[in-house]
Image 1: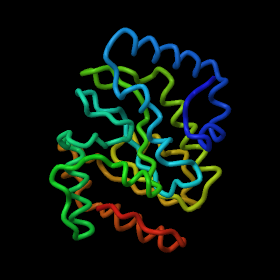
Image 2: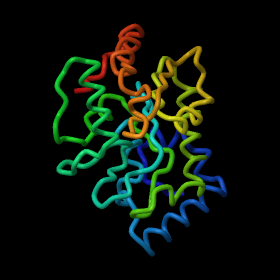
Image 3: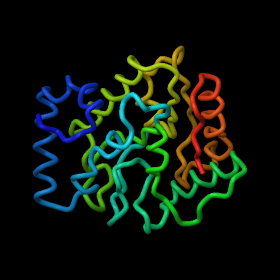
Image 4: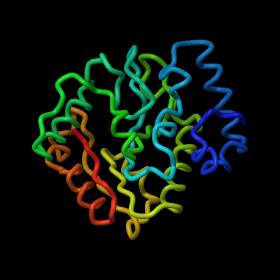
Length: 222
């Protein structure tokens, strides 16, 4: 299939394009965009991959669904375009970054492309969603596709950091080899769960310590 995606990821996921499930997924997504409002914009479906080539990945943060409100989803998990108010989970992520690193967090900015450009793959498990219907494109094939991306990184790269927030992300990371990668887990940054262990997890400083230990430049989180 002629999927428009970053070339390194096209090669890394070559086996997926020819699978029947992916053809079914592509047809479902195409029809959904034609029939109703779906996020993100079609050109941003693979934005996480396009912004962070396979060989450049140092850190993986796994989300679940794109935001389903108008103008929020930009193809990077937890990120919103410039000018869009920070959703509650993103506010909590910035709060933990600030508390962990001792650096003031931005009050309004929410576009995380600056992290992707440093090697942070901001990957949702499901890459599209119908407007105002959280989870509406789950179990259509996206999870299998993004599982393949995680598996490729796990097998073909070394010394990556996988940041898994919440039970869903933790379960998706079950295949990761802890002997060759760092896996950091905690409750989700949602206001419903952040106070149960997301706040104080210090994942950002722990990530940078691991990267430095393995000869990689730390991430400028803020």
